[in-house]
Image 1 (cartoon, helix red, strand yellow):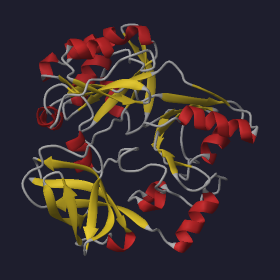
Image 2: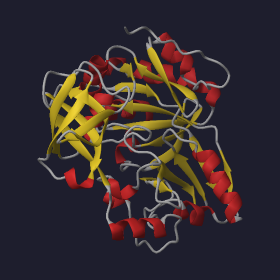
Image 3: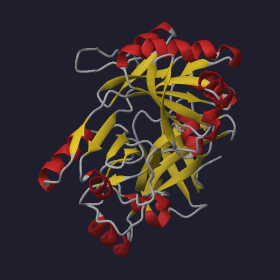
Amino acid sequence: MSHKIELTVSGRLRKSPYYNSTLRYGASSFTVYNHMLMPTAYDSPEVDYWNLVNNVTLWDVGAERQVEISGNDAYKFVEYITCRDLSSIQIGQGKYALISDENGSIVNDPIILRLEEQRFWLSIADSDVLLWTRGLASGLGWDVKIHEPDASPLAIQGPNNLPLMNDLFGDWVSDLKYFFFRQTELNGIPLIVQRSGWSKQGGFELYLLDRTRGDDLWDMVMGAGKKYDIKPATPNNIERIESGLFSWGNDMDLTNNPLELPLTKFCNIDKSADYLSRKALKRIESSGIKNKVVGLIIDGKPFSGGCESTWNAFTDDTLCGKVTSAAYSPRIKSNIAFATLKSSLGDLGTVIQVETPWGYRSATVTNIPFL
């Protein structure tokens, strides 16, 4: 028998600068992300989904914390922690990157922003990158300083993002390329504006640089967005699976390496800069991957929820992997999922069985992204 679970809030769980605003606008559930409270729903996942894909939405993603790395060896250090080649990254540009350790395991998958020649931010997913990088830097003895700056992202996502951003900031935001950013202000509120966000519907992230102004910034965006019927929302599980956006802690973690995911363009094993996981990834490349992260179309009636925990996958009654994220897609009109399977089962068209909360279902390996 299911029952309601309540989250006890204490000083150990930090609140974003937008927390009070999210309550005012009806946030109905929260999760813990980077030791912070982050909203996960305002209405139902389906209503929030359609607001995102049809219109424009505002997200409190202040839990997407920043790790600042500066000092004479900052660039060398940032290259060292990722298998992505960062030699072309410009000041004012961000790049998606996989951070991996000495075993090739994925520690996080941040956006790396270059603010100055020797000053970077890692805009991180849900793992303790601040502690990991500080420990690594201490062992290396390089000239780097690592801390968490006062920076809290607020995301504007959805197809009507650009007219709203033009109203707020002017026409210059139209010229920002994807992942590029610029420091500015809005009515005296200091910000970094980046063309980015955890959806494929288009949008921007506003990095608030003064956490005392969170409610002010929220209200300014919501006020300007009334003409576009803006709605408060959150990262949406349905849309992110459709779009092929993986979640650290769900679809990948320290048990995965970058070669298992369909993200090979972000893994430059032979890049010229020295990096921590080179030997491990070369060894894995040579011996071959044991597992593969794939997309699945799962048969049967629409799911009424997603994965609260992983679902077992089978072939010939033998355990062969796990489903890590799942949802019913209203646009595809199918149940869709991410799964980690034995690499021999990762070819398109392979059929397996998945043990869902609604019984066993047949599933077929398919392309990522789904749309």
